[in-house]
Amino acid sequence: MEARSAEAGTGPAATPPPDGVAPVAVCSRYHEAVELVGRRWSGAILFSLIGGPRYFSDVAAAVPGVSDRLLSQRLRELEAEGLVERAVHPGPPARVSYRLGESGEALVPALRALYDWAQDWRED
Amino acid sequence: MEARSAEAGTGPAATPPPDGVAPVAVCSRYHEAVELVGRRWSGAILFSLIGGPRYFSDVAAAVPGVSDRLLSQRLRELEAEGLVERAVHPGPPARVSYRLGESGEALVPALRALYDWAQDWRED
Image (cartoon, rainbow over all chains, first blue to last red; front, side):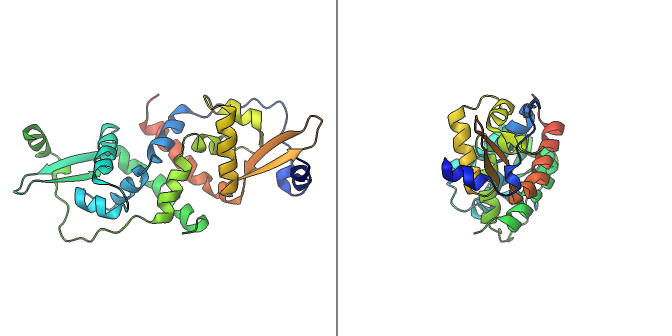
């Protein structure tokens, strides 16, 4: 605690917050949205669809480390949430593809902003 | 499968993806970043700090449903990742506050884009 206190004595981080400011609750829509997009694999799956529709196998190849089972599950969740649309192309062999739905397309600017931030601030 | 096939026969979702397009792997920096921000509570905690430094108790009040234990854990993680800075203000009583660090501030446009999307596309 002593070391922490000494450390806190320098720099702008030490400026105390104002007192008596009522905290505004974080918007629940935003809260749920950020955790939906940030759920394991979901953000990567959505990003892989930015360029247009993709077959399941191509989404799988674009998202390293995801199993087919988990990828199917996430795609179903994203479809249920309206972010992703699924199409079956009659074969033979029949193939399944996915694309961003209207709300998924609307999310692209936010995904790109996260991508840009990651390039500037995160290391491999 | 029959119903799915019939349903897929209409609308732009039925346009098949081009064949022979090599899938580009999703960038690992982006992938880790979106899951860091989307980890349970983290996106809400970061949002609560957009307006400036806040005492721990005010962050807790702004993020409904989070326990003090989990809030402490997430704040430590975000501090370790460099997104959040911690300061101790000598009392008595000593108080702890948090603020966005440089990389946390740089993330604000992405958080706002997610917020805007949630307002437009998500329901309570």
